[in-house]
Image 1 (cartoon, helix red, strand yellow):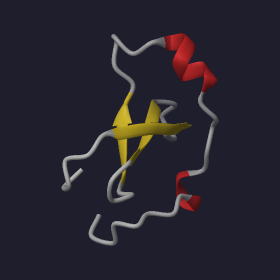
Image 2 (cartoon, helix red, strand yellow):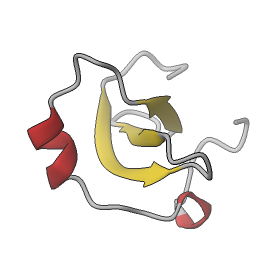
Image 3 (cartoon, one colour):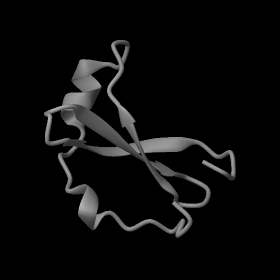
Image 4 (spheres, helix red, strand yellow):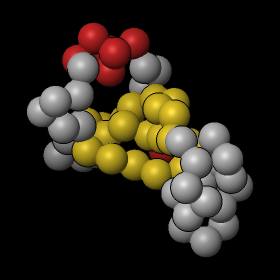
Length: 64
């Protein structure tokens, strides 16, 4: 994020092409960012994250 704080994973969602995305929220400013799942991401931890609708995520960073 812009503020440089840690980003915490808060959930996952799937794009229309079924690509899995991880949703992170900044612990400092609340900005939300989406990242594609990488080959070295832990599949067990990913499975523990809730599936969320990206349209419903509140973002305190209105500049995204």
